[in-house]
Image 1 (cartoon, rainbow, N blue to C red):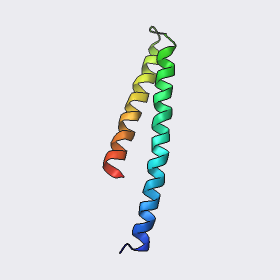
Image 2 (cartoon, one colour):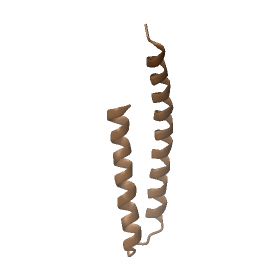
Image 3 (cartoon, rainbow, N blue to C red):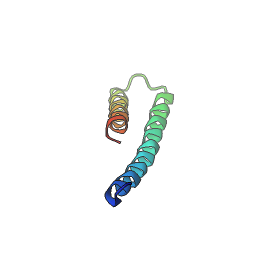
Length: 67
């Protein structure tokens, strides 16, 4: 039998899982849109892409190991 606090934790984790999935979708969409600009010379856009990739990777790790 689950306790109230375990039941709450399950519900919270489901909500966090749903929200982080939506965030991952948005991050991936942002990377696709930046890539589609075709600007291969901008160091700033390169840095943004690296940041988005890193953020995506860390969020995936969070979902795998902490949810």
